Length: 360
Ligand code: DAH
Image: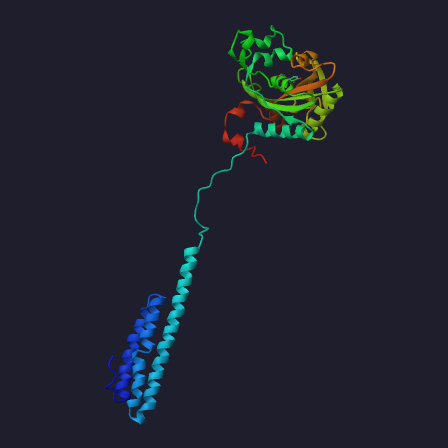
């Protein structure tokens, strides 16, 4: 802008008003801090119209200089102030943008998935295993497709035992005595396999699936779970068996649980017994309890002292070691403890049933 021919305050003030309006427009239009810096240089810097006006003061009549100087200073101050105000606004805007660019939107909607849980049967397996681990036992496993030898012969079960019939046991390979294969009918073959592989002492529990040619009803499933137990050492007695199972029953069913044993028969134990636990739901016999049907006792498991023939079959010397064994049905444990009407519920996959046992 040409200012050299300005002659006095009137012309100057008009000129400055124009300069000021243009400059304020440019300052307001500066879109970012870089643009504002170049606008600032242009409107208040050394080459600005304001600076040129200041330089022209010298050639002005002396009486006009003071007013002209004030006018120029006022415009210069106003423009500088406008630059600062705009700079603060742009800086604030830049900060807000940076914060927004950095922000995590915690209100964002997201897909939730329900957390699953172990099936009640597996919760019971874990719980029973934990109780025996606490008593010093290890957890062992064995194959579900089993040789008849381990399922029957090694367990002192004679060839004519009714359980060996095809009507009872699910065979994979039937009729060739040497290598008859079946789906194990109980977890007891794990005992024989374990003893074959390990020297005494033995303290194991062995959970797993078992298979029987049974029709599904409230108390039977053709595929079900058992937990086997075996303790072999020197001088293991029947009282060790009873004490161990009583401790288990108290931990599983509650501290006031009583146990009783009734004589029974299993090929692989002698003597053999069935263990009953006192009903945790009522005060004993004669009640109308729906858990024990008024008996006061609940049949829980089979057990006994390991038969010497079993020790011989697996290479142990029955003159050196004694032991006890037991086997329990997991569905039965769960059914009794939770008052579950029918075992069918365990395999129906009804989410309303499953959700009642969310586990820990
Ligand atoms: N195997 C037996 C069954 O399925 C349960 C059983 C009874 C296991 C006595 C044992 C035992 O280890 O000693 O009915």
